[in-house]
Image (cartoon, rainbow, N blue to C red):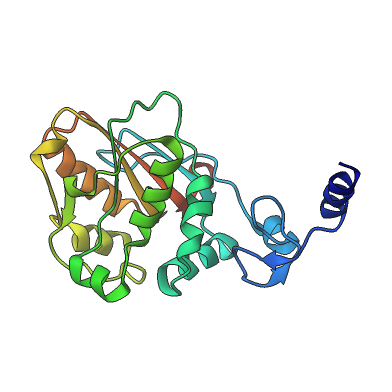
Length: 217
């Protein structure tokens, strides 16, 4: 007993180094996996208006240098282990009554090339945590919209217009859409519009990061 207590005290005073979830450097990290520098630069999301056709929206972090590194490491560097801590950062409002949870889909060729859909990995981890079932089949991306990063807001809307197809199984459901980043909200809006076209009762959206806050607009 004394030996175990001594080890616990030493672990608390002198924690082992680990790789920071954001910068990837070996450092002393906090309980959420961030080194001191990244923790100080991490911005917690406050509030933003839901995209059109979306009944409620929230996120974990403001999209900045710290949070974007996590997303890019998951998305482009095969750091799939980050899906769980990113999902753990998501908090679903208590008043959202959810029947189905699904990720924003990738076009199948892009998913085959990458080997995975990063949003689906986050959704899987979220569903495991809250005890929900993932319903990816309710929505598919029907064409390759390419990357939206360099497009204007109007260009993003044109790019994703009619790029999704929902399933009749969405009828009457309250659906939670999950994605990695919201920028203009064009993708979430188009997904929600299609799901409601096929009878979804309500569509909520949650993302790990949001590129703006309502009070900063």
